[in-house]
Length: 192
Image (tube, rainbow, N blue to C red; front, side, top):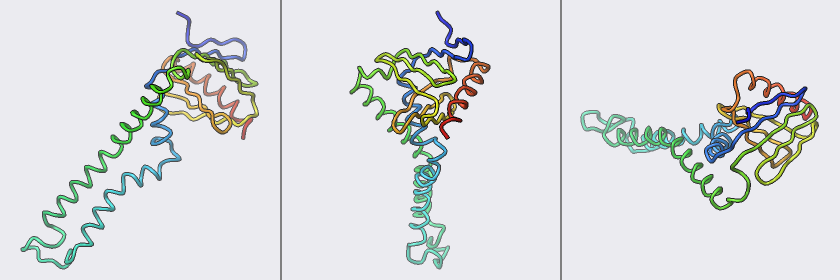
């Protein structure tokens, strides 16, 4: 089996396979884990707690109730609101991951010949990169818009306005990953 990483002069040749899991990781990153989406995450997880606070303080006599009668802030109704709100905060990210995974699975099932899954080859050069996949090839020239984003297990390569390429980290050693980071930073530097 050929190595996933080859270096020739200034060129890096990367061979890898993309799976359904890689596309799910991209969907999770783009819609939930992306640092630019942090306000969305805070809003999605904070909404149940906001509903709890509004529900508690909008009840008549919430602050002036008699503790002996079970009214006021400490009552069974507020306890139920609190439990439901905490569960909603915990379940929101789990639900988002599940829904995004379902969306990716439907998209891949509807487009089996789109060339999104299979063996890929990227050649990183000082003047750009070449991507070859199951359904053809794409070429990127240094100076075009290029923004690489690094996730926990992937690099996400955004080119021009609508293209995004996935590059998994698993096939490469830590030293190879550092070479890839430097090559990506070089290409990104010309597009700023």
